[in-house]
Length: 170
Image 1 (cartoon, helix red, strand yellow):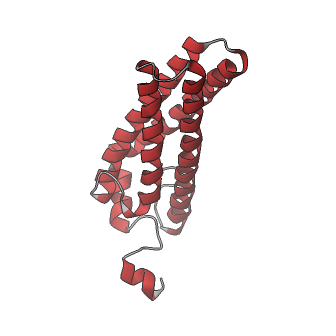
Image 2 (cartoon, one colour; image 1 turned 180 degrees about the horizontal axis):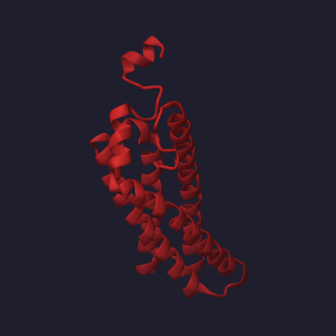
């Protein structure tokens, strides 16, 4: 590690040995490993519903319900992810290793919440609601990509540490 990174307290690894042990012991690691792919499947179904509505004007109820379900799963994964981050890093959000993922997650949450408010308060027309949902989904895709990159980093690190489990989600 170069001197400036050492002085800044930045590790070249995603996890310290202690953090890795806490990650592997946390029940939230498995929960995140189940919720993340579930949320992605729900996202794909919902994206199809939203695009169908925007293309045809049909299926507003299905599109709306799908975005609401996607948002509820997002809230669940954010809460459990915060609990995971607390177990592993000792803080609920913005830990060193996941700072930028958490920053983008806040934008994802804000856009999904704006969708719910706009929809249930009738602040936007249905087409504009669905366009807002698409904006929320675009930020979700960016955020999901960030987490996939971190998962791959963690798996590479596991190869470098003798005895580290290879299939553990981050």
